[in-house]
Amino acid sequence: MFEDRLPDGALSPKLSHMAVLAGQYAVAENAVAHGGHVRTIAAGHYTVAGLSRQVRLGDFVAHRSQTGVHLGEVVRVEPELTYVCPIEPGEPIGIQDTIIRKGAFRIAPSDGWCGRTINSLGEPIDGLGPLAMGLESRAISNTAPPSMTRKRVDTGFKTGVRAIDIFSPLCLGQRLGIFAGSGVGKSTLLSMLARADAFDKVVIALVGERGREVREFIEDTLGTDMQKSVAVVATSDESPMLRKMAPLSAMTIAEHFRDQGDNVLLIVDSVTRFAHAIREVATASGEPPIARGYPASVFTELPRLLERAGPGPEGTGTITAIISILVDGDNHNDPIADSTRGILDGHIVLQRSLAEEGRYPPIDPLASISRLARKAWTPDQEKLVSRLKALVHRYEETRDLRLIGGYRQGADADLDIAVRQVPIIYEILKQTPGERPSADAFTDLATALKNASAGMVPAKGR
Ligand SMILES: Nc1ncnc2c1ncn2[C@@H]1O[C@H](COP(=O)(O)OP(=O)(O)OP(=O)(O)O)[C@@H](O)[C@H]1O
Ligand SMILES: [Mg+2]
Image 1 (tube, rainbow, N blue to C red):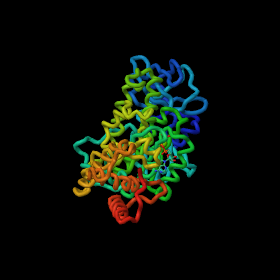
Image 2 (cartoon, helix red, strand yellow):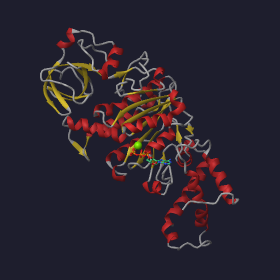
Image 3 (cartoon, rainbow, N blue to C red):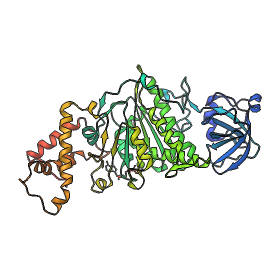
Image 4 (tube, rainbow, N blue to C red):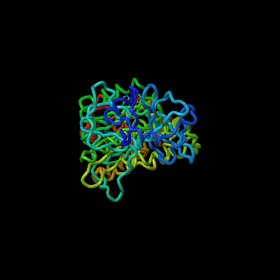
């Protein structure tokens, strides 16, 4: 949806919904006069002469071919040439074709979007008919509210995932990253977190997922909660532009609900694939790489996106963002992991070794941090967790020693307690997505420890 108009023409099936809703592809001869003309065409981008003075970086442009109207984003502006990345790969574009400026890409979310699955352009892809448009259209490249107008983050909530509620509890409006290698359990954990009761709305952006996983994630995760959820999907086979836009559109929908006063949960799976999409677009436009092939724009886009989450201004709701980050080759210091860790208010680290032991969700309680945990714990809980962490640490650092038979009961009282209690703690932290979310993780833990000391439950862990 845009403010400008475009010459009349057939619409590509993919874009028709959006265009019809905007009702803006009417004839406008003067718009043509302000357009430019295609100069060069390459895989992944084309250049336009005559647009440089009209467009800004990030603006959208449109092009009409025999197959319809196609969109592209301005990714570089030079005095004579404008570089454009088309949204649809394989767009039939020719030298001298006319290109029209369309301005910022906008969507108009409404409550009618709840229960729906849409693509990055705000079009329904669930076969449930047209979407009800909201009264206000919003640019998907919006900026964060000014920091001094934002509410403070200090209301804790329960996620229902015991390992998080005990060791790294969260607050409404927090931004949390889940860091792990491939196949370790990121998406499964996100799906468990999406069921937290604390939220009025849930917006999910699935970026670069396998097509097979999308329906599974949406139907299995949201189930009966679908009515308070919107899913924005750009699968791995879609163009980098669409993959790049998915989290931006999802954030814009979350902002709409936040401004109505809702507490919104925004889930992005995964931010790494968002970064990959930006890298692909940047590479196509000739932006030089600066770290591991990533261009500088990735490191400005990431904070721009993530800063938009958080508490809204007074009188509005909050956006709690939980995002997954794929750490390449389990290297937790790759550039995307590093830069997002600095922007976020907490990180949950999933370890492959724990998954291999069958300790799902494989959350490492010592490496995971919630920077707002102190606002979510009671003082007693904080003291208890610090003691639990010390026990877990003691247990882990003596693992090799115990394996070679170097542990003697009675020699170290603290270690004796760790050996007795840590396996019980590990056992209570195990949770499958099919299980009911925990209503109170600390009560569950206390009950497990009490039962074990009464000999009711044999301690299983390692
Ligand atoms: N809480 C859990 N309980 C039981 N099994 C789990 C749990 N979490 C993950 N798994 C197992 O691990 C597998 C991989 O999980 P998942 O797809 O969530 O990983 P991922 O990190 O999102 O992978 P990718 O990097 O490919 O996106 C699942 O298919 C499931 O078998
Ligand atoms: Mg996944």
